[in-house]
Length: 349
Ligand code: 5GP
Image (cartoon, rainbow, N blue to C red; front, top):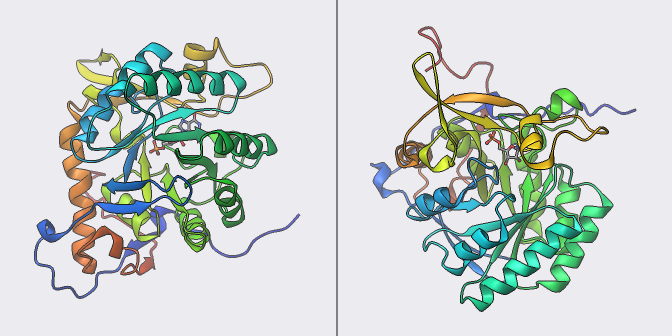
């Protein structure tokens, strides 16, 4: 047994220190980014925020709404082949949409068929997210090798991991964007069930450093609870940020509104929760525990308004540190460790 004594940090443990700046208004800030992916060699332009591949955020409706603002969506993996084909035959212009899959033979078979058929229909899948709860297994790495050998020009995001050495391994294996985060999610219970995880801000800092040394990219996945957390993730070196809970509870969630005591609510649950497994896998298998939970969120209407808040927050952070472009934010970020974030004398707003 070994104990690492370095302190590892979460979003709540830091604030971004303001710096002298010549910027006078948030409107002068450009929060889009341009990337060339190291393996697919494809170029990317957009606001690097991705809706999570959960079934109430990774929806076709969300993809269309976010594309209008150049944001992206990772579709959830429970769509049928016919509807995926229709979508990818004419994907929305603006954002990039990721096709999501696990690492089973049926997952791969389904992907091959949709890929081929959408190509014949004139569209094409350009981005894929290979998503497993634990990115440290041999089976995952073997799958990445097979996928990359068969599809050299697809932009590949894969994870999840939380350490620099595994980030390097994945990039060397053919991954363009390493997805970073184990346990920070709003409806994730892995830390409670398994006792496994890593504070998300430190995971981002360490994995971004490892990835950038190899010209790879990372996506910070999970744990953002406010626009300020996105600013901290970008400040820590994230190239993309993935959001679940912050984008849930909207019209685009493709989920029913339930009325409870006269209030309109929407269900939101982890993709490894009992609720999700009952819905998609006929229940929780005997050998495993559920690693997610279900919550009821206030219904929030169209996602458009929430997007304005999120993007406004990131722009504001850039203004405070004098970053004219999002690209400059991490270079201009100094974090200060704090023991208190907010003044909650009048309650948590
Ligand atoms: P959020 O933005 O809501 O804090 O986090 C979203 C992320 O939580 C997702 O992108 C995914 O990585 C993770 N997640 C979603 N469902 C589950 C689950 O059931 N269990 C665990 N461990 N993580 C989940």
